[in-house]
Amino acid sequence: MKKILSLSLGVALLLGACTEKDKEPILAAGNAPVITGPGANTSISLADSTKDDIVAVFEWSAADFGYQAGVNYTLELDKAGNGFADPITVGAVNGLKLDNITQEKINTILIAGKDLPGDEFSNVEFRVVARVGTAEDLPVLTSPTVTLQIRPYTVVVNYPFLHVPGSYQGWNPADSSTVVYAPRSDEKYEGYLYFSDAGAKYKFTKGPTWSTNWGDDGNDGTLQSNGTDIPLASGAGVYRLNVDLNTLTHQAVKTNWGLIGSATPNGWDSDQDMTYDVASRKWTITLNLVAGAIKFRANDTWDINLGDNDANKKMEYGGADIVIAEAGNYTIELNLSVPIYTYKVIKN
Image 1: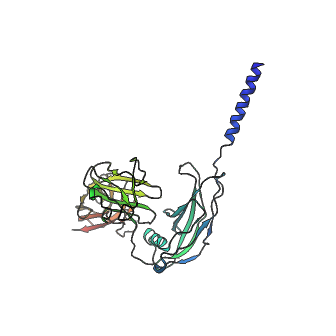
Image 2: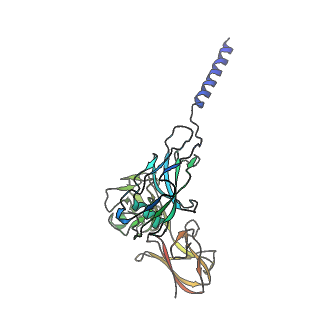
Image 3: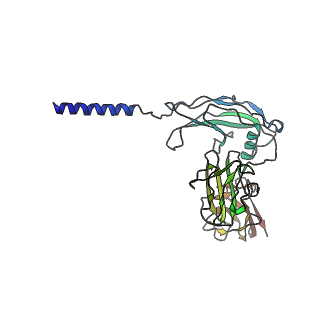
């Protein structure tokens, strides 16, 4: 009799355990969101005189992940026909609409981030990306694209930037020479700054005061409002600083730049080291080149490298080789102190 009771109790516990597990939510991708406004092919003309006006109310239907969950929605745009190979975030929200996007913000994204012409209509594609949490293995639902016809206005672009006050420059948040930029106006900032002091510390501020500032309490790459000063990781030198205010994260990489390519003395096998000038904030090198190609790369690896996709003296990460048409002695200059990185190739 005791054996029968024990068996019955075990079966009951097993069934109870299965019942509890069955109650756990199963995350299964279902219906993607659909943009309901503005409608496809809507024409929008932007103007400097109305730059503070809302460009449009972007609305979409809810994503269905198979159970009730808090969903994060990101509105992205790209040039039509680009297949969202290089999307720019317009805004992010936990709800089903964005109603605070100004004409100025869209104009800056299109002119500076997408290099679209001013004062003429271009087709711009929008989509909404829905996520639950941030884990890579969680499903992502993406809406069908909606194409709008937008005419940006020509303007001298003032790129958004963050100040980087620290011990290396007197803890002065108003110093406009120690800033990092967001050329795409997407709250993702980057810049190259020189730290002469191996023990330097710094913070980030939005504006020339300490009113809005971020540090890193755990020195773990995560930013906190009014957080702890951030120390250098690898001593004095030129650092690439990246800040993403969307995720409140940051990164610092010490860089030493070199020239490499079939036009250089060692070909593609090794770099020709460039020299950093503190006063001009530029990297330079003078050497003999043969007809061929060159690129710039940091730290003798391809992790960080710059080329020129459009042969317009503006640099892109992983960009195309730069052509050297004829042999000669050249001075090469790399300028990473500006929002859009540039270079010069001067034959001596």
